[in-house]
Length: 318
Ligand code: RIB
Ligand code: CA
Image (tube, rainbow, N blue to C red; front, side, top):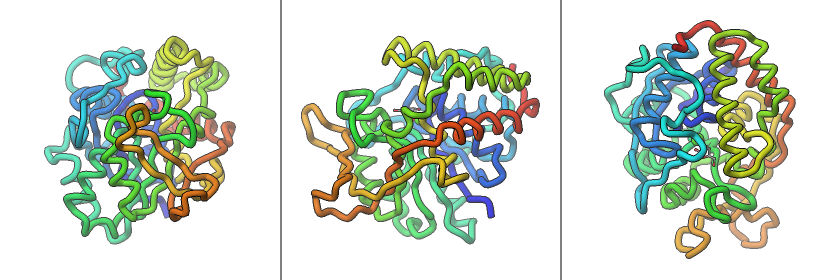
């Protein structure tokens, strides 16, 4: 049976590929997409989610906008990585995409979807966790309708936005703390895993060879993403963080996982937003989080290329 999924995202180049993968693969039943401020402002991440769906011909999946700022602290964006639009690289058609914005806010849409489904739904957040935290705070009675939360965020070691903190967690540490301590099962794919999933020139060439308008758009996205990751981090190829979440749901063997206690640092002067992953059980806290570790990169990229092939030619890219 396909896994019923709601994506909560901040497109964002890698979020965009997660939308494609979830929409394309038969093992996933993509029920809804919600957006959050993160890589860019809420207005831009929401427009980008609609643009990606229009380009890929993804129809009938409601898209709703969520929170435009964290629960506490300043709003951050990652313009140096994703550009002024949040999805720089391709020449998207100007104006409104022909995929509508749902009139509900993100939390209302998720609540409605959870109440409408007989079986629990998997939430897949790949941006700051503000929407998920607000959902859990506003509707604690819905926690039993959430199968699990499979998120991209944090790291078992260093951060990427400060030496200690990864971007999604640092954007809203209080929200992340609420999610990790909610009691809902959490699977976490942090930088220690996602940095293995790099879009090498060979991968980009495989996508280019598909020869469709969508594959050309994907090449433009990855080419831009490669330039910023080279300029900012000195990477030889950009890591496609977010699709590890959906890839794991499709084929759990693609990424090894271990169970560990995870704590989010809220108060450290230099460490706020860090995820402290207790890999050796030294804290005595319950090892209640699944943490992604080793990636089968060949199998991962096969899924991504196949998703672009499957969707190719369905949408309108410009
Ligand atoms: O740190 C990487 C994460 O932050 C990814 O999800 C990226 O899209 C940004 O949201
Ligand atoms: Ca993201």
